[in-house]
Amino acid sequence: MTLNLQELQASLDNSPFHQMFKMSVFEANFEAQRLSIRQQFTSTVERLAGTKQYHGGAIASLIDITGDYALFYVLGFGVATINFRVDYLRPAIDTDLLAVAKVRRAGKTVGVVDIDVTDNCLRLVAVGRGCYSTRAG
Image (cartoon, rainbow, N blue to C red; front, top):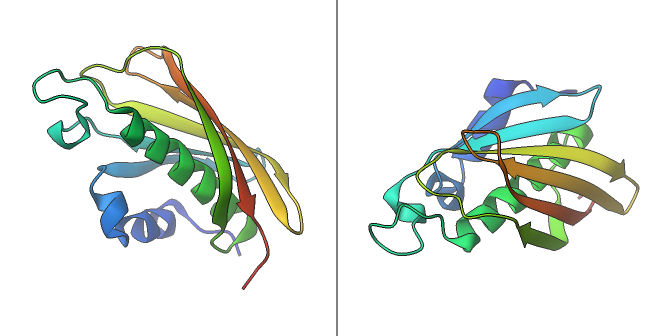
């Protein structure tokens, strides 16, 4: 059973941690095994008060959550993070962010997802790769 955007958003909203980041499911394409999540800029993600610059941890969380939800969408069940990597390419300042996840592998035990994060001007801010446990139950 494929989840729709409303079901994905309801699951995302169900986590107090996720709520802190003002995220919304932007797009889901089952055939392409791709999922996008938008993160709204708020002062809660600032590196230093008043700078309007994202803290790297907020971007890392967006990458991990988007990778996790991409596999959730493809597999139909939640997965646990094994490891993920982030490369920061430029500061994200006073902008919403869009994370686009592409599932590279959804195997019996491990899933691999690549995630690109862009700003409002479509500039690449960060790239990530997540590895997730795909064992059901």
